[in-house]
Amino acid sequence: MRPVLTGTPATGFEVGEVLVNPAVVTLQGAPDLLSTVTEVLTQPISMAGQRARVTATAVLALPSGTRLSDPSVPAPTVSVEIREEIASQTYLVGLLCTGQPNGSACLPQLSQVAVTLRGTVNALTALDPGTLTVLLDASGLAPGTHQVVPTLTPPSGMTLVGISPGSVTVKIVPPPSPTPAP
Image 1: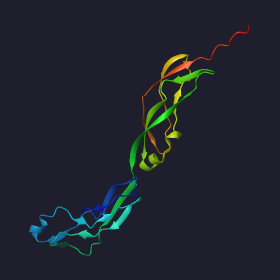
Image 2: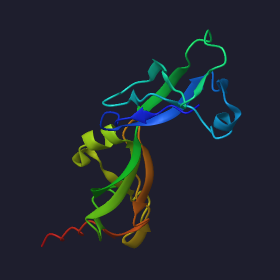
Image 3: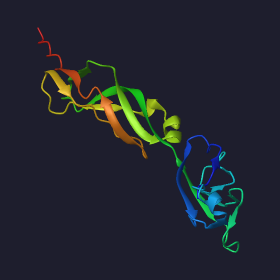
Image 4: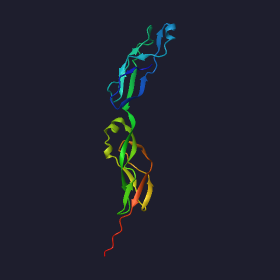
């Protein structure tokens, strides 16, 4: 038995697992008709605008010339999981140096990196990329040029897929030497 689902769930949602109970029905009819039946469909069940599981009592669309072997068997129940759609989104995000030696300047050679996050479509759409900050940890770096791996703690409910490029060149500039008094 195969349920016929029509329509599209609400924006940011998708159809997940579809369960039918019972999954099989027994038909009666002329043998030549029954030999051509490969599945029994249901009447359409609408998914339009749905945001949560849909459970419906299915109405069967029996092939012409057939009937249920036992008409007292209850109609099948169709349960359709409606789940939030998962996607990935890439954002351009600014860089912030942390941990540089006291008084030293940390100068990234890039102003932004590409950050790819994975989460629900609704969460990704609602995310303000201005709230994201990629950190460059300059702790323990001596004056000079270094490759630093950028890091980001993703917002709650999202996962970090990646940061590109995977390393950023930073220049650590020591504090200016005090000018001796005359």
